[in-house]
Amino acid sequence: MANGNFVDYVKIYLRSGNGGPGSAHFYRAKGITHGGPDGGDGGRGGHIILKGNRHQWTLLGFKYRKHTKAPHGGNGSENNRHGANGEDVILEVPLGTIVRDAETGEVEFEMTHHGEMKILVPGGRGGKGNTFFKSSTHQTPRYAQPGEEGIETWKILELKVLADVGLVGLPNVGKSTLLSVVSAAKPEIANYEFTTLVPQLGMVQYRDGKSFAMADIPGIIKDAHLGKGLGHRFLRHIERNASLLFCIPADADDMQGQYDVLLNELREYNPELLDKPRLLALTRADLVDEELKEMRKNEIPKGIPHIYISAVTGEGITELKDMLYNMIIANREDYDGKQISMEEE
Image (cartoon, rainbow, N blue to C red):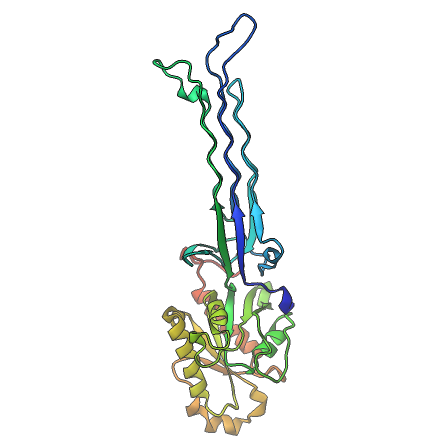
């Protein structure tokens, strides 16, 4: 996915359709000059609806469509004919999209299931025709309701990456290289910090045709929770990963220190992130021999399963997939808390 095509934050203008006015018509026919009221109701204005789509990964389409208006409802007419409802406008968004009110910043809802639809801006109600107002004491109402106006508003759409495994680490620790080895994703890879500026997604093929999604999150730096280095923009993507794979180089001078920085940034941003299952990958294992591994075993962070891996030699890659799969299958739940299988889409 090209960096320029990954859009994760948009502010859009929306206007739902006006409701159609009711009709104040009276029945007329040959020989009937003073018939009763037969004005129909106006049609509802068009809704603007969001629909979740698991095949989309970006809000790119809204970059070129920042204004959306729904059609108005039709007028009511004689013979109690109801005006046509305005056609609803359906906007498809990736799973993990959050809707915020542009003025208050308040989260309104989140799209988490494929095919689910939620009304983003409701259309105006149609006005009642004069038939509606007929009663035993008022048999010839000469008025009808106008349609209700649609709603004009600005909304913020914010995307959080949705994946089974999120790669977490400081910049330039081998996350992108790992993703390129275990999946078909082709992230930009170079030996300098912040090569990855947007999340990269890849599908990891596992045994017996099974697979799981992995996301390479841009590198976290100290004080990212304060917004340093686009920290908030990066950290929020971690929230939408079911489990976390921490990546620390096997030849790092202070493995525990790096791990502590990562944990602290997650804790300060959202303490609930520490409840996610996690695993530690010690990358670049080809740069340390068995003797050095033995010498440094007490420097490996405690309280988290770990494995040495090398994207260059392939060391530990198969075992890593096994560990990740077992972690995912043991902890993977949908957003309603119901256990689901890896094959379920």
